[in-house]
Length: 275
Image (tube, rainbow, N blue to C red):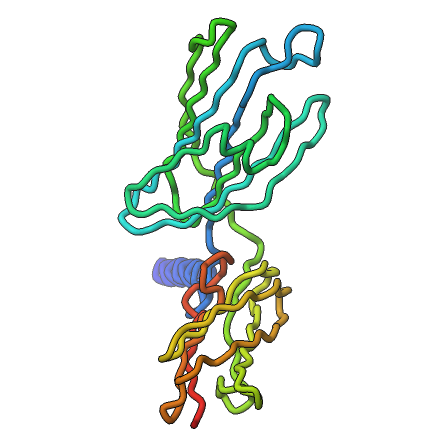
């Protein structure tokens, strides 16, 4: 009886282990949704309204300096936008994203002059957030100072902002598409090459750029936004002197890296047109 009980217990434990392994196992080749990092950094800039006006902070002149540091050896690309907050629970203007790159161990500063320049607003006092998004963690530190009637610094505060980890529900994935025969030489009588760019991802892709490198030079053309599952054709003029006698080329979609994709390793393809 004891042997039977022991045997049943062993079978139960084995079944539980197998179930756990089955649940935790990820199919070979399955893509993990990429994690991105976001920083929402508060800013206060300019001279606040005085008594008798809509005064929401103490009278004074406020400054914000946001420092961003790349702690890695390789170049890091990120983007930033600005969202203005208005009094009385009103939403303000939101800027488009601006692309930025920092080489290894480099740092930059986003200050009030930059914020006013990006927002194109005439107000002398602005509050809101600078939103920074990147694929890797960054060092983001803000320095806040305020001056009173004397114009001298009366208060100073330094704050480090931790990243918010974001797992997107879907991501675009841009790839060059060959013709039905698997060739990329889709050329017309005028000597222009048609490149088909497909978004095989699960989210829409914004505008980007497609680059084709020929032996006699390279050509870059703008690529419009592509919805998830859609595709567009862009036309590239083949440079003079490419056919010697054949013309080989290399296509790179999203050549400037402005689209955050689920797979950044499938953006290129090689083709050749017979002379």
